[in-house]
Image (cartoon, rainbow, N blue to C red; front, side):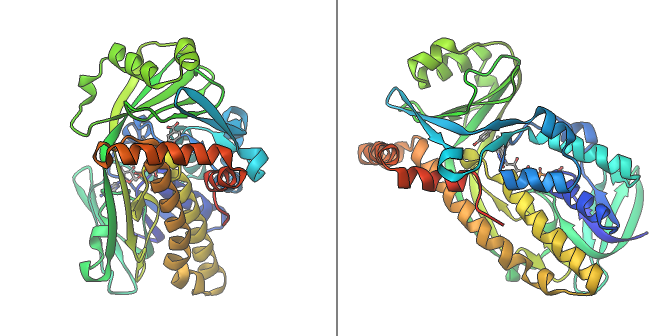
Length: 389
Ligand code: RFL
Ligand code: PHB
C-alpha cells in the first residue's frame, strides 16, 4: 500500500489533519491503536478558542458545533468566598465556545466516513521505518495480518504515549517537563450546570472547576492527590467536597446527581524540541502537554494542525517546502506561550502545600491584584481566548 500522508492517531489532531488534507485533494491513511468506541468514550476538553472554531469551519465539520456549541463571553474565578468575572469579550474582543472534544471527534469521524477514506482502528504494533530515507513506511498489524504503507510524510498525532516521538533518535530531541504533585478528578453528570459560565475556584482545600457540555450535562473537577483513585470518590463524597470549595451561593444552587463518568488525570507540562525529524511531523499531545487549567491542549493541537496542513498543501501545490522546514519553529513559538499561560494559571489556582504560608499569601495577592487591574485581566483574557495564528 502507499499513501501521501500516513497519520498515526485518530484523536482530534489526526482526524482534523486528515480532513483538511482531504478537502485539498491530498490522500492520507489514519491508523489508530484503539477501537472507535474507545476513542469516543474519552471525556476530555471542552473549551474552544474562536480560531479553533474557525479552523473546524474551514474543515467543514461545523454544522453540529454551530448548533450545539455554547458561546461564553466570560468566566468566573472564585476565591475568598467571592466570585469575580473575567469579561473575555469585553476585554479581548472574543468569546470562547464550549463544545466537547468527544463531539468534535465524532463530527470528524463522520466526515472521514463520508469522504470514503478509512480509519484503520485497532491497529497493533504501529511503527515507523525508513525515517532516514525519503520514503518512510508505516507498519502495523490488523486482524493478525501485517501491513506496510509507503508514505511521502508521516504525521505523528498519537498523543503523549504514542510511538512517533519515540521513533526520533534520542540525540536529536530535547524534552522539557514539569510534573505537578496532584491530579484532576473529573465527573460528568446529567444535571444542569450550576452556572451559565465556567467557574474556576481557588480554595484552601484545593482547586475546583465547574464546567459543562450542554444545558443538561455538567462537568466538574477537583484537585486531588495523585495517590487517589476514582474508587476513593463515591458520588456523595465528590459532591460534598465540591460544595466545600465553592462560594456559598454557588454551593447552594448546585444540582447533584449520579456521575456518568469519573476519572483522574495527572497534570503535566511537557514540550519536545524539535517537533519534526526528516519526514515525520509531530502534532498535538505527541509533542506537548499542558495542564488543563488554561484549556489550551486541544487548541494547541488545532494550531499545530493548521500549520502542518498549510505546509503540506504548499508542498503538494507548488513543491514549496519552506513551511515544512519551518514547521517546528513556527509551532513552538505559540506552544511555549500557551505553556507559560497554562503553568501560570495552574500556579495561581491550585493548592501547593510545599510552598507554605508565604506561597499561599502570594496567590491571594496575585488574585487580588488581578481583579484590581484591567491590564492584568486583559492579559489573562487575551491568553485564554488564544493568541493569534
Ligand atoms: P489524543 O487525543 O491523545 O489522540 C491521540 C490518538 O492516538 C492514538 N494512539 C495510537 N494510535 C496508533 N498507534 C499508537 N502507538 C498510538 N498511540 C496512541 C490514541 O489512541 C489516540 O486516539 O491527542 P491529540 O489528537 O493530539 O489531541 C490532544 C487533546 O486530546 C488534548 O490536548 C486535550 O484533551 C487536552 N485538554 C483540554 N484541551 C483544551 O484545549 N481545552 C480543554 O478544556 C481541555 N480540557 C484536556 C482537558 C485534557 C484532559 N485530560 C484527560 C488529559 C481536560 C482533561 C481532563
Ligand atoms: C472541561 O470542560 O473539560 C474543561 C474546561 C476548562 C478547562 C479544562 C477543562 O480549563
